Image (cartoon, rainbow, N blue to C red; front, side, top):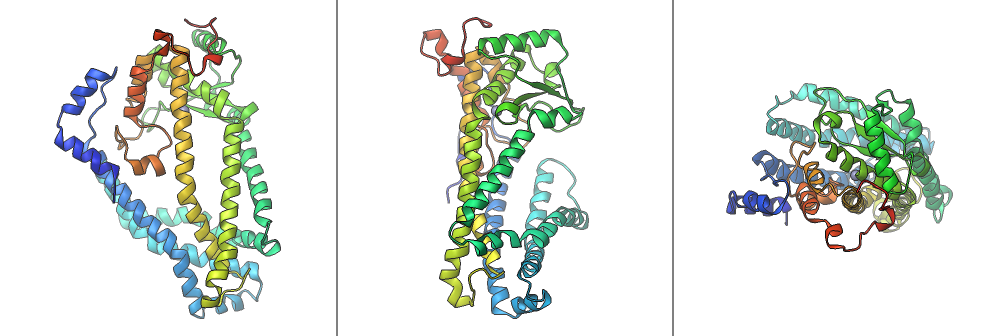
Length: 421
Ligand SMILES: [Zn+2]
């Protein structure tokens, strides 16, 4: 088993202090050594994730065995009056309850460990359990009311139904992304317009340099004590794209850092949150629908005789759920890797537009996540994070300055000469 955390721990223990000394010499901002708590958490999180994946993958198969090899499935059929959608709903509720029972000890263990590492009081099991059951209520409702829907699609058209489902879900996801930009932000009281004329003019100068104008900008109001008051973002899709900056950065950061952050988000609005994001969403949804369909159709062919399972019967929902989990195992790293590339390139765009190397290196040196590692584990980069780690971003910001040697810029097209420089 190869874990990045082990490698980081080995380097940290074998070369005490050396990493920091070296980092001072090479980067504009020191890359801190990983904290003990963060190293422990990285190992814990990986073990928890492995255990949860084992449960998530094994449980649909175990549930299938359980209901088909006992009289449970026949009883559910009788209780539902042989109405298959109701039968699906009962099966769904039973599965969610089973999942709750099996995953609860794991979830509680992780919650206790995280709180200890953060020097917070561990929750009591009853308090934690009540909150967890509360979280699960929407899933119970969804299982009861909607678990028949994917099966209905497979029953209607086992060959091409998934394509129709993929198209409908893609439209819904794209509609949501469009709505989540300027239309939704305009209605949100926490998002205000930028009123400071000095900052309006600074951002307008950056926009001019990039050859654009009037990019919608919202300032998100934060409050003292809030966990992360300095993470900015780009929202929306295509025509509804907008930049959101946290209000706190105008107090806590240097003007160069604010400009570097603005330029980073500007790249997302101009180059990522458009057809590229739309294509990624459509591909992920359609491939997901296809995978679930393969499990529903092929799964019955493989397991049908052994379990007495026939095409389109309610228990096939469990095979579709397994297909969904298997798909997520593959799709999540793809999604995170693409996202990480978009983020890295947004840093490059920001550097080419502002030349604020120091500011660009200072921004990632203040991470929002308390237990992050300066150099992340491979597992977390694949399954948890969609941003490059702190060390990668600091090193890049410290060394990338092609404009000094006259090398061509990657985003030369956007670097209009009538800008800040
Ligand atoms: Zn970004």
